[in-house]
Length: 141
Image 1 (tube, rainbow, N blue to C red):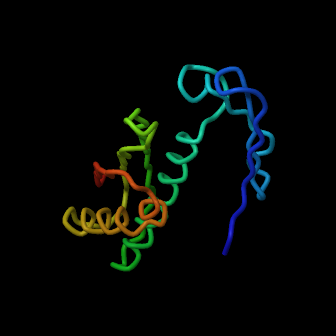
Image 2 (image 1 turned 30 degrees about the vertical axis):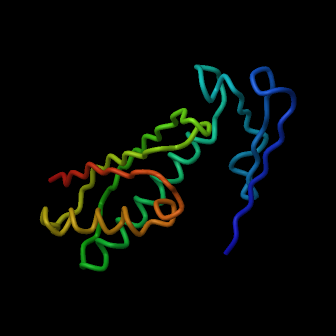
Image 3 (image 1 turned 90 degrees about the horizontal axis):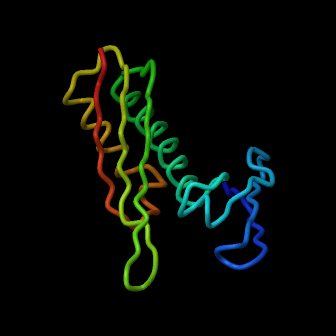
């Protein structure tokens, strides 16, 4: 399975602007810019999209891991915080922190934590990132 997205950019780095479009149409001419990436401008940015992709991917992977243990999650809420830092060779995504809260009746804490760690390691977005990935997972009752 392949997914496609495209980006168009006009102008220089700081004064330019661009748009992002996905084949699904969910993003269609969505604006992004230097200001949206490094300051407080309107629009999205690549790091925000990676955070969203990672949170979504992890949530689905956790649901799958729980199901392998016969547990049905009522709700999984995941946020991902991406750290973009300047290094000698330029900017890099150095870390992602996943913060998850889940309601999964019948799950005990050790089984839930194991499922969360397995999901973190096995999620395709986790596997593609060259960054330190941390996790804070809480099982709600």
